[in-house]
Image (cartoon, rainbow, N blue to C red):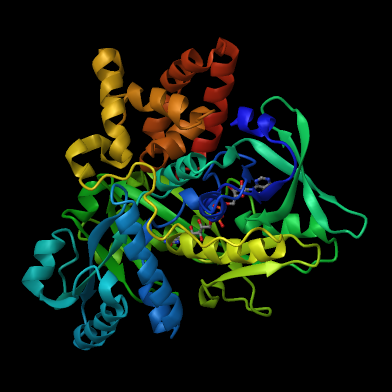
Length: 517
Ligand SMILES: Cc1cc2nc3c(=O)[nH]c(=O)nc-3n(C[C@H](O)[C@H](O)[C@H](O)COP(=O)(O)OP(=O)(O)OC[C@H]3O[C@@H](n4cnc5c(N)ncnc54)[C@H](O)[C@@H]3O)c2cc1C
């Protein structure tokens, strides 16, 4: 990627700032149309919100309730396309709405039928009403006291940071240059104040460089206003940051392979309990934040709220000591007036052409990243007077595409890369040992992440190439020294690097452990 950067002469067609779902989508869209694209991410790809979602590829039942039919239809179509283009990472999952009141079955039954109808040819399966026995068969660990039955519907589930890493690879294959740990520190402007490029700093060696572009695209998610203010110090903020947290519990809290969907929590939100990589993922919250951080931390009352809500629906009541990991993410929601209720803000996306000529793309959802990118690149091409070329991503396979990846077992998330990882283990048997009894990862995952997926730090490997930190933070801390040693060997680093990496990782991982009772 550095060679691509150095070999490039003249302005790029597009410089994308931010390597989350939105930026990666824009890079793929631009590069696959034949535009010359550079993407710069200040930390690791997916370090921001895009590794911290509920991991649903969905239309959003809640948005249907809010009457936002067009957003739901757009998202349901994208859900179908994503299943087609990345079947190794997206799966069809049954969601059961448990009914404890007589009116719930007909009420949710009708709403969920409509949800499936709106998906048209991209439907994931018809919803239906379940008897009490059928509900418990699907969800043996559900609180059965007062249970009357349920309604089942089908939606998509994925692994967010694995998809992101595969999107980055896809953009690279389409010719884009993409660098992690390069921060955009300023904007270059012409004498009229029009943005013509970026100033950047490589955070690994401190080197600074400038790069010019026909169009600079601000895809920095919750940080969008920072770059907007650099372009125009008088710019009014457009982001209303809102935090959501998830708790991860042992898989036994949600035995079976269906999810629970609670349409109305006591704060008027939706709550999910989802089977994910052998664990149970429960969330989320909607807490307006005064400012954004790259490593947000769950608030005590958010943890209490999720535990309390989960305990209403789970037969085995979860306590703080059962939490194996807790993570927080920040929604880059677009402001609507001075609304204090972020749960009510639209999840639709916004593409803004700023007075400075920079484009800001924000809001939206993981599910709609491809469509957001198409919209953004269409506008960038017009603004930058790029040769007109149609979007090519609707049927573009994403790196790792494999129609039956499940046959790779533990390595299924790697899709078509799985045989290469198996080969690593066949050549060196020491790489096939599990790093920890509580986690499904081996030394081969670490070596692969460094050699093929641009992992630079222990956190990159344990948080985003594998999901160790998100599944079990204590286990992740325990294996950090071994991961650091393996990485040091691959990257040619010294012991001091290993020690610093383990310390830095531990510091971050402590934020994934719930505080004392
Ligand atoms: C709790 C929660 C649950 C969610 N669940 C779902 C879900 O189930 N399904 C769904 O579809 N959507 C979901 N979403 C929404 C989805 O996760 C987000 O819409 C999406 O991840 C936003 O991606 P992004 O690329 O815009 O932002 P980010 O992922 O935050 O990426 C922005 C990137 O810009 C980088 N950056 C910032 N400043 C600079 C700079 N100066 N130079 C270089 N880089 C910079 C940051 O480091 C960051 O990596 C959820 C969101 C939250 C918070």
